[in-house]
Image (tube, rainbow, N blue to C red; front, top):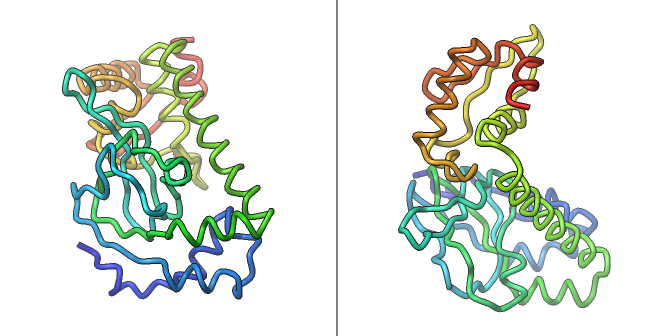
Length: 231
C-alpha cells in the first residue's frame, strides 16, 4: 500500500490545483492545508459507508475511488469511479445528510480529507470560492443527469461504445490503444450492465473487427465504424 507520508505531497500546492481553490492565494490556502489530513487506503478498503455523516470532503492524490451502493437485490451499483485530483463528498458534507453511497478504494489509494469547518469559513468569506464550489457540484449533477439519460435512451452497446470513445486517445502514429482504467466488473456496473453483457458486447465488437481486447488492453481498429455502429 502506498503510504501517503512516504510520497511527501505538498498539500497546499495540491489544493491550489483544484478548480475550487485555484483563485485562492498561498496565504489563504495555508490554514486549510494545515488542517488537511492524508489517508492511505489498501485495495478494497472502505473510506466511508453509506449513511455515514461526513466531517469534510476528499481529494484523491493517487489511485482510484469508486462511489457505489447496494441494490435491493444485493447487487453493487457503481455511481462513479474517480481518479487523481478529483474531489468528492462536497454536496453531502454541506447538506449534513447521510451519504447515499459508500466510497471504496479500487486500487491502493491516497486521499486528502479537507475539514468542513475550514470550507464553511471560506464559503462565508470568499465569493469566488463559493462560486467555484457551486460550479463543481453543478457539473457533477449534470454528469449524473447524463448518466440517467444514457441508461434510459441508449442501448447497452451504445453505452459501451460511448465509454470506449470517451477513454480513447489517438497517438502520434494513429493507433488508438489504451488500458481500461478499472476492472471490467466495475465498468459494467458503472454502465448499468451485467459483467456478462459487457463481455458479450466486447466479443461482438471484436468479431466485427472494430476493436481488439486483451485483458484490460483495448485497441480500436476503426474509429469511424465504431462511432456509426448500433446507431
